[in-house]
Amino acid sequence: MKILDRYIIKTFFGPFLLIFSVLFFIFIVNIIWIQMAQFMGKGLSYFEIIKLLFYLGVSIVAMVLPLTILLSSIMTFGDFGERYELAAMKAAGISLTRVMAPLFGIVCVLSVILFYFQNDITPTFQRKARNMLYNIAATKPALNFTPGQFINQIPGYSVKFDKIYGDNGQFIEGVFVHKTTNVFDDQQSIVAEKGRFEPAQNQNYLKLVLFNGYIFEDNLHNKNYREREKQPNQAIKFDSMVSHFDVSDLINKAIEKEQITDDYRFQSYNEIGETVNKRKKENTDVFKNMSQSLISNTNNYVGYIDHKKITEKIIPQYDLKKLKKEKRLEVLYNAYNKINFLKADAQAKNDQVLSIVKYQNKMIIYQQRIFSYSFTCIIFFLIGASLGSIIRKGGMGLPVVIAIIIFIIFYVMNLTIENISWKGRLDPYIAAWIPNIILLPFGVWLTYKALTDSQVFDAEKYKALFKPLISKFYKPKEHSRYQ
Image (cartoon, rainbow, N blue to C red):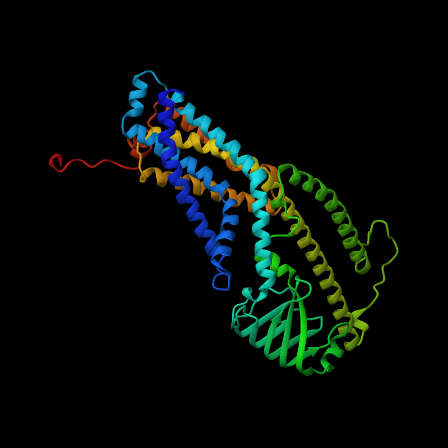
């Protein structure tokens, strides 16, 4: 390795290590605000918190490394330009391509390392982090409750606790539990003075023991309008009552996962590909059954009449004008219920399809980003090195601003395209690569401008370009002494 190459690499890795450490710390703090707020002060030891942060921190390397390369490249080549070292190299016959070559090789090596890191190391630590979060959420379910506020985290119920106390938040007072159902199903509400959480035999369930309370019920299922009007309210007093609530969805939501033992984030690139192919076959069968069920339910309530094929006169089942008022109301009420059922059935199946599509696209995007983030490192280097040599400013001022702006654009594109793909409006394979596809021509263009010593940020150049257009709308004023 030549002395010049060693000097360039040494100059690059100085800010690289510093910036990587700072950005890693910033992203870790972001994790603390988002993930750890519900666990702080709940009996976790410092060792458990540090270990969990370490597990979660491994997953942010994929975002920190490209931004570090972008910022380090701008600062390195900006310093070369500001100290006239870049001009000296060019005067000695060393082209900008030759100056960029050693760092380009280093960035390619870092990109390969990032791919293997995401493919082999990140899934292991993701599994450790999710399992640790699962254990915390499963053994301390009260951590997700806020005293004095209604929450809907337990599927099918809305609950409120006036007070939560105890070493593990296991004791509660002022309990109100309401079963959330539609107006056609049985209604139930539970009010109790005190209660406590106890470990359930199945960790997917929350065991709640209540004392001194009432159960209020309205049995409305399969009853018509008249029967519901006559239905008496029921209240049952109890001294103690044991209830089990299915909180598997609550735990899954708390740790942002679908399946704790079989999550796509726990798999390598090839393993995710196999999972995607397997789920595509399963989803095909699910969609087929849903379609048949929807058609069957529709045919049971609504018959399609082709007036071109049926010549005989169609006699309606009921003539509403000839029916008595009570019978007419009953017929209309039944028709209304049938229409509502069909609408609810279609909406439920639509939501189910969107959920399946979203999860499928999530897997594909995650798989493709194992590759795409490695290419992002190379693209960010081209952009950063070219910008640094053009603006010729080092340090933590202008380079930091430019790097943050570029990264924000990249991040916003990622989120926007990701959300579009989750809704099934964009192919996930394309969605994962669109930010790179957009930024690559920009990086190549900047590299070309840097190699040709173009003044990209010369304000006078752009003023001259738009001067003919501006002159049509703006008339220059004469100096006062010529007036």
